[in-house]
Image: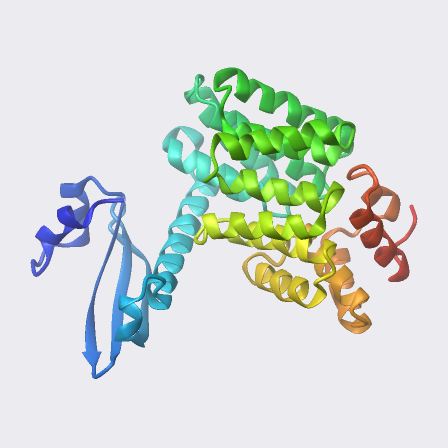
Length: 355
């Protein structure tokens, strides 16, 4: 991000986005114009990738001029969210087609984090390649190893691990490697605690680690998010709602917002707020409709709300993504707990094969 003081110098000039990018050493430039009609404003915006001098996103947004004066401007939030998503999509697309040596470290990291949340084995495999490449480039940095630990967790929850318990243990071991490099890394603590929470062998230790992560960095949204997940699985469901909502508030424009919304929906399900769970799951699916955990959460909330027809549609869509899923396979994802038992009961009622 470049400060407003630096960019104001280009106001009113005819410089191209490429020229501006070279002067400021900025990879992306957001530019455009606006006009006002009474109390309405129309913004014409475009986002340019300066490496290729190519517009990757353009749109026209309309709103109330008074909205621009608000601390939480809906118009500016919409603009920021659209730009963030366009930037992420551009980076991820490049990581899928370019050789690893041609990608900068930021692209490797963003691509690795994004692709692990997709539902195909190809994307998951590429995610690991990208994260291993950035870990190799920056051998003394903890965050690539922390995200590699998360990769092992995602392999299980996406239904692609032949040995869930072993992959959770690999996640713990990889997070320990990150903590060896940076003992106070809240990200590594949170991901290790999350893996331990799934594994369920020592839920007290996992809770302690997650709480330590939030104390080390109270502004770490991942730490709060995984505290919320722990409370869903093993603790107070109402606390899960508060912790998950804190995570969303700390990262309102997160590139993986669908993931935050999915875990918030999970906390609503655990606490019995079924209507809110359905609304938040549906919002998450608009951003990533192929994410099995979101579909499981939505399906269960629909079924428990008496919306059996809708639950069956969600179940059928999930089965199209995971055709080999069985009840026995799902139960291998982690130790039994009240929420997992409710989801398993819904699966059974909708006809998921036992094995």
